[in-house]
Image (cartoon, rainbow, N blue to C red; front, side, top):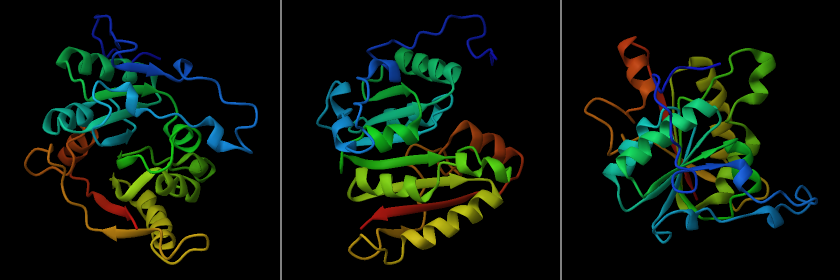
Amino acid sequence: MSFGLGRGRTLDAAPGVVGLSSRDLPPLPDDFMANPGGSRLDPRPWFANPDLPFEVEIGSGKGTFLLQHGEAAPGINTLGIEWEGEFYAYAADRIRRRGLANARLLHGDAVDFLRWRVPDAIVRTIHLYFSDPWPKRKHHKNRVVQDRFLADAHRVLVPGGELRIVTDHEEYWAWMEEHFARWTAPMTGYDGPPFERLPFDRADSAAAGELVGTNFERKYRLEGRPFHAAILRKR
């Protein structure tokens, strides 16, 4: 299925400069499930200045937040991860045309990438905005917010690092609230609560009246939908 995002223009993801594919990564070792540390790779050297603080956006869509954040925060490297191929190519093409050196895009599964590839304690912020709510009960297993995901987010975040979440979907938000309650209470295997919950503060790159300024937020705001947002800070 084509979304016609290029409007007849060939999209250039600038492979090796902006765009990356899971095919560009080394294969997972045969024992990666038993020895996940053996599959880790550090994505920070993918950027022109690898010493900058490193952030991840899950589900970059058309790349609007990634572009705005990259321009507003030139001292931060942000890796966007997008599963849908045409959206990945469109967003990467936009980054290429803007000439942003602090934003890159990976075409792949963000949940798997965090779980199997990202080393411990290297990510300052994980941005998760308007992820697919998978409303049918039989599809709930596909939702990003799960206990396994929160464990992986806690592992890859630096101390004090943040998971920032916004959604418009009431039932998915109720699901998230149940998970947040578990992960902000004392939990076996952790020294106290893994996360501290904080009120959401709007992104510096957002326009007036916006939380983060994604395409979905702007569309849903025009429809009058209420938004739900939270920050989980690693303790």
